[in-house]
Length: 365
Image (cartoon, rainbow, N blue to C red):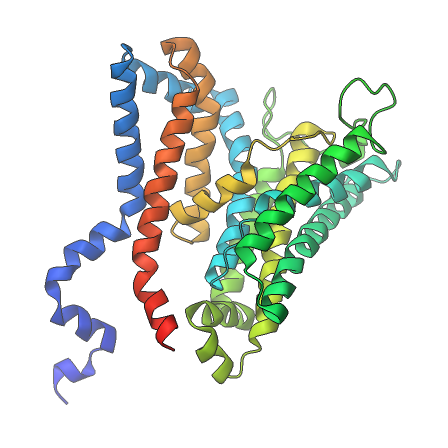
């Protein structure tokens, strides 16, 4: 048999269009280019306002990785981003846009708080897993609603998940100003959770808590599910083409609902870790947008669990280093948000370009 005929079809195609190899290489590392470009634009903006970009970025680095406490804050910031990003990633793999990670995060935090506020006397090794399970289930239910509507009624999941964000956020606002508000009623927040439900601190004199272990374990489990189980194969098959998956015998509707539930559960865990590890009580608007940033983290991580961890570290370092940059170089914190916004625009734009051929094939099916 001819050597060319023995090659896989994809390899033959690549051999037929060698001139596209540099373009594929460029697109494969596009998140890296996007990040570098955003940082370069940020340096130009810093220079335009009369400040030193090198001094500013040195302050950003010191604030994120300068000492053990800074590293702890960076990892603490990366924890909810990793969990939320994994949730968005899981939905993306099935071709679903879960824009509701923020609402699922609030739902998970509320359920975990209810468990953490009650059951005094429970040992920590029971209380913490119980609160986490409640947070996962609440997030799964909150995401399962749009999943059901998508699978059974054809409702666009982007709209339904986005709308449910506002429902969850405003529901929490009402709870912490009403039935769950602390007796003093000075602030819109609950009383502190039971000590037995607090996640242990891993790094002394820092805010790094055991939630980082949960996030890393979740990344490993998501990887194993997606690439080592039948469920993961079905999820990816639905994402590659629902019609083809249906003809292959896969229950597409069930896969969509289950995928959204798992996606929401991971986002719910993000809220749970924030309450049990950092806040220790439920507050209104306690999340600075971890759920929304999870979308960018998933895309910046190339929809790979390991990539999500790295992207979360990047965003966590920006958040933790922004204050130091402001103190040392007098650079406004808002500049960090501009850099984040540029990364968002470039990464999302790149993702859309990369997915255009797939969407075209799906439309032809």
